[in-house]
Image 1: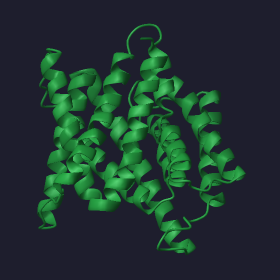
Image 2 (image 1 turned 90 degrees about the vertical axis):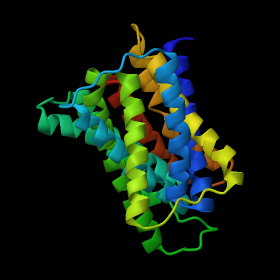
Image 3 (image 1 turned 180 degrees about the vertical axis):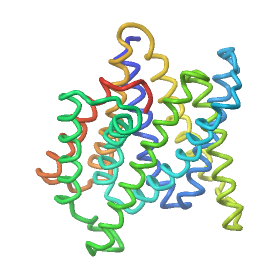
Amino acid sequence: MNAALFGSVCALGLGSADFMGRFSSRAIGPHNALLGMLLSSAILASLWVWLSGTHLVWDGDKIWWSVLNGIATTVMTLLLYWGLARGPVSVVAPIVAAHPVLVTLFYAAAWGVRPTAIEWTAMAVTLIGAAVVARSAEPEADSEHHDRKFFHVTILIAALSSLAYAVLVIAGQSAAPVFGEIQTLWMGRLFSVTTLMLIFAMQRRAPHMPMRWWPFLAAQGLLDAGGYVALFAGSHGDDAGVAAVTASTFGVVTVLLAWSILRERINALQWLGIVLVFAGIVVLSSHDRLWL
């Protein structure tokens, strides 16, 4: 299996898992949906660590990057599921997917990694595309809330999720050279589950996941973790960058599923914005390190 195919499997896994998050979040709430997804994802990651014989590294000075990665994963996904549940998916997914712009700007500001002319252009294209998506889209026709205020709040939720996604990526990229990609994913999932359980405790409520939703949540988590397994499997060798670029289009999968299954209305201008967002992301991913 070549790098492009591994990247495509990753995109299908992550994009499908996000799409499924819309249904589970609407049915049992974002917190419960996320817990179910994280548990099955953490189990798969644990099995992967065990079966692959991964040598575990413990560095107390650097482990806070994994803690931050786990916290950011929880915050990002809660906001993502909340936004997807509100809809439209074709608006939320591209805005959240624009997070590589924030990652690139962070490296430029904090570590002096100056973007190239191509990267500046890609960031501009991505931001213009996200603005076009936000301005041209309309609220869902079947939504309980048809006013623009509700729609604008959804866009804000998506933007905050994109910000949390950037933190997740930066923390993951900082932890991976120390702990390795597999261990970083595994620890991130464990810290993410811990963070979510603390949120439940602070809210003084217990998780509620009806048994009939367990198979769905398990599949959602397996697709999520399986996407990363495919990405890491294709991230070695001369074509490693191809896997990252292909995998970065996972948001396209989410949008296409919303368009084909949910029959979301996407006008021509909105399609243009979506294309611009993901065109910019593909370029940025080809210049960035391998972490989604």
